[in-house]
Image 1 (cartoon, rainbow, N blue to C red):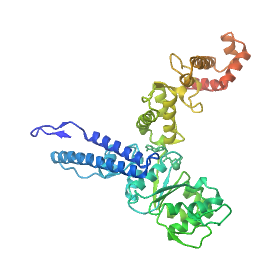
Image 2: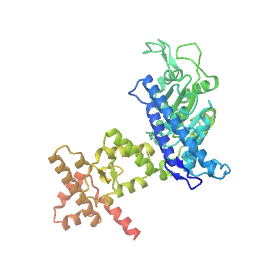
Image 3: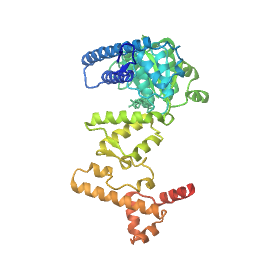
Image 4: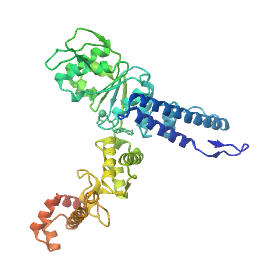
Length: 438
Ligand SMILES: Nc1ncnc2c1ncn2[C@@H]1O[C@H](COP(=O)(O)OP(=O)(O)OP(=O)(O)O)[C@@H](O)[C@H]1O
Ligand SMILES: [Mg+2]
C-alpha cells in the first residue's frame, strides 16, 4: 500500500509487485491443494475455501491500492494486450482473477497462450494444445479446467498413446459385464467419469483411426455406448486434447482424420519450446530449486557460475520437465553447491569444460558417499578422471603422447580411459574446434 502525505509523492510501503507476488504464492498453494493426493476431498475443499478467502482479501487490498494510484495519476487510454509489457500482461491476468495453476513465466508467447486459455476456459469449445514434450501441455489443460465453470467437477486425463488398441474402446467408453473375456463387471469409461467436467485426451495423435471415428461421434452427438451394451448414454465432457505431433500434417498424410482435427482444434493453443523462451530459465531455475529444497527438506542448492551458465544455454529437448528434473537431481546429489559433474553424464558438457574440475569442487559421487572410505575413493576417482581429461586435452587426444608425457605405461592409460568411459577422440575434435576458432 502507499501512504499519501498531503499531496506529496506517495511513499511505497508495499509495492503492487509484492501484491502480485503474494497472489501468485496463494495461487500456487491453491493449485497444490487442488491436486493433493494425501488429503481427503473434504479437507482439500476446506483448505481451498480458506485460500480463496485469503486470495480475495489480498485482491481487495491490491484493488484499493490501484484505485488510489489511478486517482493520483492521469487516466491513460487502455493499451491492447499485445502492446503491453509482459509483466503488465501477467499482472492484468491476475487482476482478472485468472488461475495460473503454478504456470510460471512472462514470455510473450506463453502469455499469449494463457490469454487464449482465459478466453476459452468459460466456454465448452474443444481446445487443442500442441507443443514439444514437457512444454506444459497438461498443465495448460488444468489451467483451462480451473478457469472454467467446471472447476469443481472431475478432470480426467487419458493418455491415448498408452492404451493398447484392443482396450481403447473399453477404456474410453466403458464396458458391460461379459462383453469380452475378462470383463467380469460393468465398468464405466473415462468419458462417463468426466461427465460434467473435463476430459484431457493426451497424445491424441497416437489414437488409432478406429478410435478417431468413435471420438468424432462423441464430439458430434455427446453420446457414448459401453462396449457390449445397446444403451446410449449422454455425456457432457469438455474436451481438451494435446499432442506433440503436427496433426495438420498427419491429416494431410491420412494418418489423422481431418474432420476430427478441425473439430478438436476450434481453439488452438501452441506452447513454445523452452529454448525459444530462454528468458524464463532463470525464473524457473530458482522456482524449481526452491520447490526441490522444500520437498527434500534442505536449503536451496547453490549453483556454480559455470553450471548456471550451462543451464541458461542448454537446449532442453525435454523442455520444462527436463529442467525441473535437473534441479531436483542437482538438489539431491549436491551438497551446498552444485557443479557440472552433478549433471547426468549424457548431457554433461564435453570433457574440455570438465577438465578444470578440481580445487575443492566436490563431484556427485563423492557428495553422495555414505562413508569416509567411499568418499575418499570417489574423490580419488574424480581426481583421476580430471587428470586424464586435462592431460588428453593438452596433448590433443593422443594417448601415446599422454603416456609419454607422464611417464606411464600406454596400456595402463588405456585401461584407465576405459574405466572412466573417456574417449580420446573427443579431445581430438575439441582441439580442432578450438584451433579453428583461432
Ligand atoms: N510454465 C510453467 N511453469 C511452471 N511449471 C511448468 C510450466 N510448464 C510446465 N511446467 C512443469 O513441467 C512439467 C511438465 O509439464 P507437463 O506435464 O504439463 O508437460 P507436457 O507438455 O504435458 O509433457 P509431455 O508431452 O511429455 O506429456 C510439470 O511438472 C509441469 O508442472
Ligand atoms: Mg503430458
